[in-house]
Amino acid sequence: MRDEFRPRVILAFTRRPWKRRRLTASLSFSGSRPRVHHVAYAVPRAEVEALRIELDQRGLPTYLSAQLGEVENTFHNASALLGHDVEIQVDSAEFREFFEMVRGGAEDWDGSDPLRPVGA
Picture 1 (cartoon, one colour):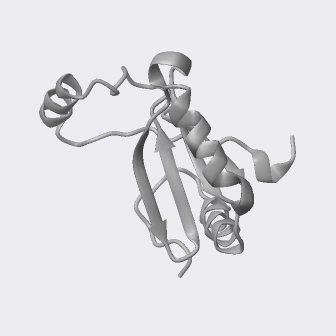
Picture 2: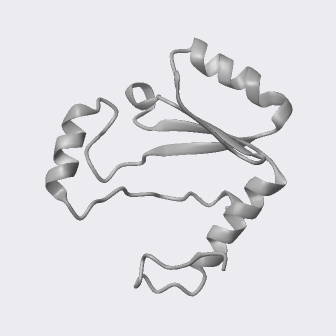
Picture 3: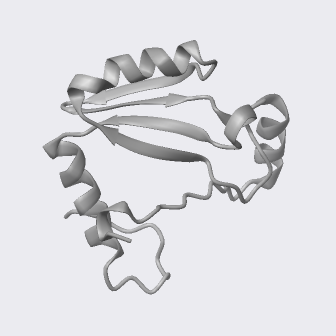
């Protein structure tokens, strides 16, 4: 598997389990933990809009859209169909730089001190 396509698993947690239980009960897209939250695809800018429209038409509606500079993504609710959501990310230099920073933060990490500066 090529290094840049290594899957990243994100597990949500809280130090207040009572609050998580209350929120989980009220959100239909919250599955039991642990689970894969989403699978992301980096798509060339020229193809992104058509793909997002197609996902919406196939019953995978957009529930979150975000943009920070050239980093732009949407999340589509695919939990009922696939068991996880789908993220569509515009492939850009800024997007790749961000994940290079994340990868750098993981180098030589032994699992201790989970909240630490990255990209400093």
